[in-house]
Image (cartoon, rainbow, N blue to C red; front, side):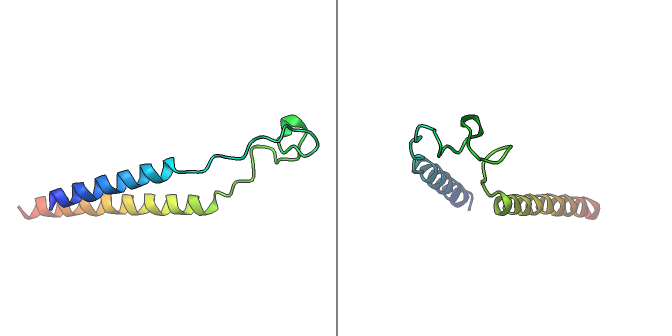
Length: 86
């Protein structure tokens, strides 16, 4: 069972690394001018950064954090319960 878990973990790690390295490069800079999108070049980009959406990623991160904390609490109570029964 332990070797199966290791195999799955290694497979997930390799898949994640390969998918992250296969990302497409951003398009080249157009040289600025009137169509510029950066505030330094006189563009109209919002202050504080671009317009990247972070809402769904934030919800996923909060959900995973809550699940991880719940598992840690569950394991803590199970160990405490086991130690009281012994």
